[in-house]
Image (cartoon, rainbow, N blue to C red; front, side, top):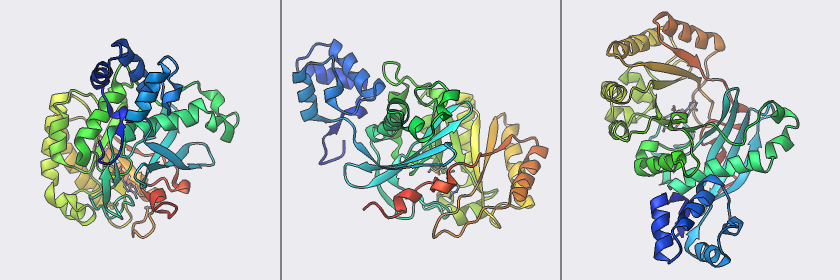
Length: 370
Ligand code: SAH
């Protein structure tokens, strides 16, 4: 709960809702109905909960906030591949989320904090530091509000007539916690968010469709491996050694690569889940042949211990006020070839939404919010 604000019911587990329902003297089965409205039916107002009595709806409205977000701005890429949302929070700040259409299904990139304190030199989210961590309800509402806008209200069909015909979906199939913020700097809320998202009585997403990306906070990696949540762990590496890494990611000084690899090894052996390493290619910083070879060596060493892994190459997104440039496509494919020669799985992330400032945190900085 955020001090000074009404309790956010979307952060409540089924058991907590049940306890509340019993405490106010309602029948037990109301808990299931209420949980379903809050999590699965993605309504934004208690008045929409038509199978509950008016008295109960009024009581809920007094006690709780249902949807803590407001859509403040929507930007749609002209090819329909990406839609970016700026959400206002109840305390006046704003966060960003991105919806993306892939051939195999739609995906949402969720923010875990308003701002970030990790200080990566190429990232927009961290430029004004951390304001606060998001509640589970604020993370869930990013997903539900976007699904409502796109699939229930037909906003996508309206913007791109005919484009929806080749699919028949009413919700996204994967969630990536790769928006603003460091998820392991908000560990408990992020785990609660995921548990609510995969709850069979609620939104019922498969845990396998969830990815959490960290800059390398190893405590979080150790905690996650004991949660029994078969999600995908992604590590933002972005460099082949600690020297380069600590120049662009201050967190590298506290968590050197060897420590991260050790945690990854344990993570893999405990969960059996393939690990993703993210590597943003920045011209003149980490994109040379020697960097690719050094990265290959590190990855080979990890693979020798039995770890299955995959490298996601991301052409860096230019950010205003940040001196990073994207390498030529030729340099990027050369980097990938060196990894492949060393038998390392690598893909180049499809470029999405850069025309609408999809690089994390840029919309929030763009000036039309406090
Ligand atoms: N804090 C988490 C998740 C948020 S960022 C983490 O560090 O993993 C999601 C990914 O986008 C990270 O790999 C991050 O390093 C990368 N990223 C941030 N700014 C970027 C930019 N300008 N261009 C390309 N990737 C960027």
